[in-house]
Amino acid sequence: MRLKVMFFASLLLIAGLTMFCYGTSMTNQVMNPESLISGTYLVVIGIFVGIAGFLMLLLQMFQRQSLAY
Image (cartoon, rainbow, N blue to C red; front, side):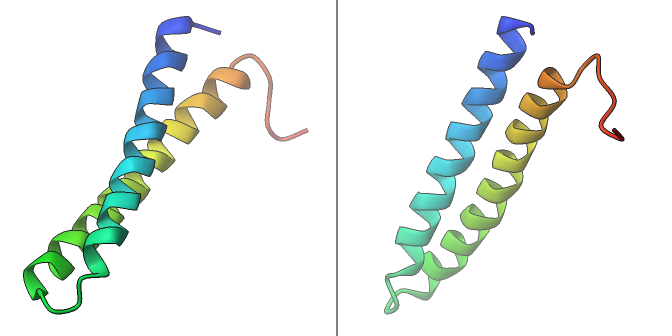
């Protein structure tokens, strides 16, 4: 496995998790509707960034093998 790709995928995973956690903490502030919308955007973007990092790691692990069997 390539070290640079694994490092970048790990950074994507950590960035996605951080954005998700920060977004959920922003949505807990019920009295401010602006933070609710911004927090929701951060949660959605964090989920997609985390999925991208996870898929990059999976593709690196199963690079030479078939996932069908």
